[in-house]
Length: 114
Image (tube, rainbow, N blue to C red):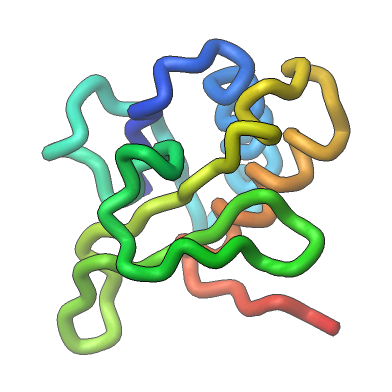
């Protein structure tokens, strides 16, 4: 799964790389960063640049995932939108790391478990 960090935020890049390591432990998944949004299946962005119609954050997270382009139940391009609060977190903040790992899970079709 290719990911582009449109935020340019180094703490988000750190959290994404941490998330990639976590998900890549499962051989069914492989995440990697790309340098161009056109090459990405998932774009990480902020509210100001979000293409999603929905602007509602998931409960307990200051972020949301939206599948913007889907063809026959296959994700063509999705978007992880982070709040300003999330973008201001330190790279080692457990909430930032957990939020990014959680949203990457949605990009591969993992539902919320209650």
